[in-house]
Structure formats: structure tokens, C-alpha cells
View 1 (cartoon, rainbow, N blue to C red):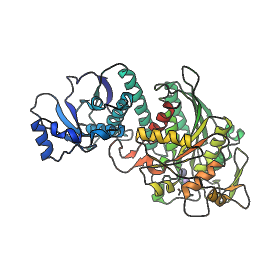
View 2 (view 1 turned 180 degrees about the vertical axis):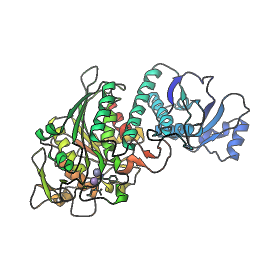
View 3 (view 1 turned 90 degrees about the horizontal axis):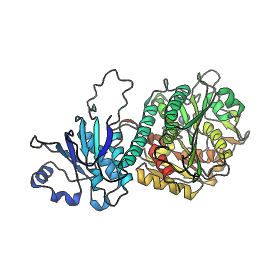
View 4 (view 1 turned 135 degrees about the horizontal axis):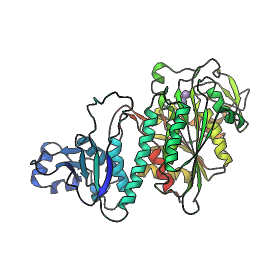
Length: 482
Ligand code: BES
Ligand code: MN
Ligand code: ZN
């Protein structure tokens, strides 16, 4: 996977360099290039690329499409940079001119987008491969972003720190459920957070019991691994923080469904069920590097959801941290149980906002497909911040309601709440309404990422497997807080 740095011009060592082309500047290309483009169907569509076979002198030229110049966006830069990386992945050193054509956009963001594009498209999860026989093996080692002016170095450092974090989250989500346990998640979190200067606190099972995290303990009953509760804290190095935000991430290291067991098909991807936890951990790591102006606390409950001899039984009732009793009618609706306690703790901290992120329901993806996460929020300003971050990062969100009239579906005859609704429809909204019962006081946003954290295909900045969804979104929202 390549490292990316900046220089004022294309270095001599580069064996390939891109020529960014807008649809409206296609006709201005030198005759031979224009003709090659025409013959090979290159129309400067966003994300389109064409490697030109040159005279043998100098670096190979790669045309990369950006669409119409008036519609240039960070997402188009990201796509074009990804297309370049894919087209030249057999080269060792390449250069890109994409930042030089980003007039009218914020330069730091443009640099970020180009670094996202080249590095994320070149990501591979190789930990478990004995040797790389991959046909799209990456040989790319060094990418130079052509950009001049003051501040470029700092902007590159920040951009690289964010992509490092996305890679961390992809690695965690790609790791199998039998190997990434709550304990090993904690060990990896300590290492990454320690290196970045983020404070880490870990609660073990005894402490979790003392703190009355009844939901986390209930889900953990069927497991061979004790639960863990991880707290991460970041404070800006300078000045008074503009706000205090609590992030909460669902950390189910494997979801078998518990006794309400999933089908083998349904279980196949369930190592991804800690993607919310990975997003929260990873999003906190680059906060010092991007100098985020807010104080951030991350709460991460960790357990797997298994079927051990004392696993919670459908119909069992537990008491959550805030004192509410919950009748668990489906043990596969486990994410909301561990998030309930974490949201109570978040509320007790009296922050300015709470944001949770979770692979909470298949229903979110049934509604929106895998390209969008579902956003639910009790506060329009907070929702707006996340929508603005989504716009800048290209990590797509769509807001769904929290309909008060559905709340009665969660009434239980024997407890304060049941953990599933009565209707087979609207599951993402019911899950949101369940979580809302544990939020007290602070503005709250809930991001149900569903399957957007995982992709069956490689395209643009996404590589088959974990997408790292949520990391760039959260970092962006936090660094732009005012
Ligand atoms: N982790 C799953 C949700 C999920 C499923 C995320 C598929 C991504 C892809 C969650 O714990 C779950 O099992 N949810 C159930 C809830 C139902 C039992 C009310 C679901 O969505 O089917
Ligand atoms: Mn489940
Ligand atoms: Zn789950």
C-alpha cells in the first residue's frame, strides 16, 4: 500500500503521471491524445481512466476523467484518484496533478480527497494470505501529489492520518470473528490510541457488573469471552473545547444471533458486527493530527453474541443501567441491548451531543440499499452537521424518522420494554426508538450503517470487504464543529 507525499512538481522517479481531463476540456487535449481518447471511448466521465502508450520517453500518461468542470466536487476528485491508482497499480512511483485542477474548492479538503482516493483504492487485507497471488496485486509504493504553497505539508499529514485510521477500521472489520475477540480488540485499541495520544480506560467484567451494564452482561451470557467496555478520551491541545461530544460504537465481535440463531447465510458476514466500534476507535485516532476543536469521548461496549449453555433465553428480562427492565424476545436484536447501557453512560456525562454508530439492523439496508447509512436524530442541528460531513466526505446518509406512534410496539406486558417491535416492517425505526429510551438530555443522533460497512465488489475507493464507512464521516464532523 503506497505512501503519499506532496511536491511542487512531478519527480523524476515517477513512471506514470495523470492528466486530469474535464468533459469540457477534452477537445483541448493535444491532437494525438485527443485521438487516442476518441478511439478508446474516453469521454472524461467521472472516474474514467485511460493509460496512454507513449513514445517510451518520460512517464506514462494516464488520462483521468472529472466530468464537467462546473460540477467538480471532492467526491469526483476521490473517484478520479482511485481510478488513477487502479490504472497504475503495477507502477512503483507515480504522480498526480489532481489537486492542481481543484480551483474553487478548499485546498486542504481537495488534498484530503486525493489522498483518500489513491490510498483507499490501493488498500488490501493481506494479514491472512500466505503469499500474494492476487491478480490485482499492488506494486504502487510512492505517490506524489503535485501541490505548491504554504501549509501543504500539514495538510498532507492530516490527510494521511485520516486514511491510516480508515485502514485501521478496515483491518479490524476484515479480521475474522474467532480471532478478533473483545480482548484482542482492546489490545489493538490500546496500541493505536497510545501511539496517537488518546487516553484509554478499560472496564473488565467485574467492573461492568459493578456499573450495572445489564444489557452488555445479558448479551455476553452465551459467550466464552468476558465482555469489555472501552472508553477513549481526546481533548484539544490548545484552547477551550468548542463542545463535548460522546461517540458510541456497537462492538459485537461476532453475531451468531444467540439462541434466536441466524441462518448460515445470515451469519456469514457477521464478523462485521463491530464496525461501529471500529469506526469510533478509528475516528478518534487522527483527532490530534487534524487538531479537532472539540472534546471527544468514545464509549465502546464489546462482546460476541453466542449460544453458550447459559445464553440469554428468548423471554428473559434484564435491568439496564438506567433502571429500565427489558424483555428480550429475540436474542438477535442484541446490538440495542449493549448500546442501551453505553447511551445511558453517555447521557450521564452531560455532553453537548451524542452520536452512536452501529450495524444495528438489516432493515436499514433493506430500506436504503448498501450505499447509504440510515440517520435518525432528536435534533436538526446535529443531523445537519452529519449531513454536511456526509456531503464533504461522500459517506452517504439518509435521514429516517423516529415516529412516536410506533413506540407502543415496544410495550411489554411484564417489563418496561421489549427489545423488538410487533410489526415485521420498519425495523430500523423500531431499533432507533428502542435506543431513544436510554438517551436522556443531550441531542442525539443514531447512525445505523447496516451493510454499508461491507462491500461484495471493488469500485472507486471501495475494495471488496470492509469499507471503513463512518471513519471519515465522524472525523470530518468533529473537525468542522463550531
Ligand atoms: N447485526 C445485525 C444487523 C445486521 C444484519 C447488520 C445484516 C448488517 C447486516 C443485528 O444484530 C440483527 O441481527 N438485527 C436483526 C434485528 C431483528 C431480530 C429485530 C435484523 O436486522 O434482522
Ligand atoms: Mn443480531
Ligand atoms: Zn448484531
